[in-house]
Amino acid sequence: MEGFLAGFQFEFMRNALFAGLLASFICGVVGTYVVVNRIVFLSGGIAHAAYGGVGLAFFLGLPLLPCTLVFSTLVALVMAAVTLKSRHRADTVIGVIWALGMAFGVILLDLTPGYNVDLMSYLFGSILAVPASDLWIMLGLGGVILVIVTTLYGDLLTLSYDMDFAQVRGIPVTILYGLLVVLVALSVVVVIRMVGLILVIALLTIAPHIAERHSNSLAWMMAWATAFNVGFTLAGLFLSYRYDLTSGATIILVAGTVFFLSFAWKRRGQPAA
Image (cartoon, rainbow, N blue to C red):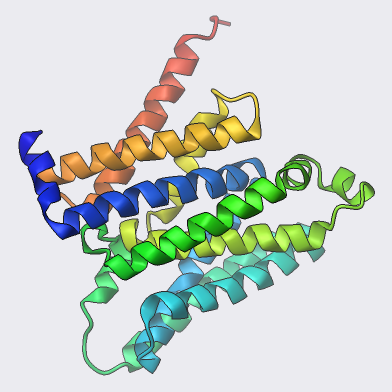
């Protein structure tokens, strides 16, 4: 433990800690909406389609994070429109966009001369390589999410649990749903740097799902989900440092283990049939 704490004298470890705390808040709040709105598959589609933004950034020589943010936001808006207007075919269309985004990114990377080591960090993540500039973007996104959730808490709550009732009450369902999906896209992209596009959905969904069992309101669910994500991140960082493991995968492994333990604990407490 002393060696782990001493590691924070290095800038990359401090950046990893701050990135983990910011990502914990972002995924805790936005992931709560993902879970209660049951849009995990849509979030997975956005995460994998974001690979097209990565390929586009490499091909055009643009900054990775801003380019991927814009690309993923546009993809998210298309998916939001599809899920609202063609719900019975939404999973099929999202699956097609998911595959097209990945294929688009792969082809652009094939056409890009040379090899860029940053590509691997987007596939599998590397919290220890998060630069200070990304922390400011995460901090800004966290502030935007806090303002939106605080201002529109009641409307988003109604939308999340009964969309038809929200429409009857005159809540702008289309705008709010589009805003929610865009927040998911932005969160996915900034967290990809930590755990990679393969594992990002786990960080968005595991903690909120566990938190749902211990909460009697959406606000408490967000708070618990953020707390769980902080615990997963710190434990994952410690194990990664202690045993020289990939940090993103270690964080998700910790989260997944707690998920199954909580599931087993819940079943243990249920009376036998």
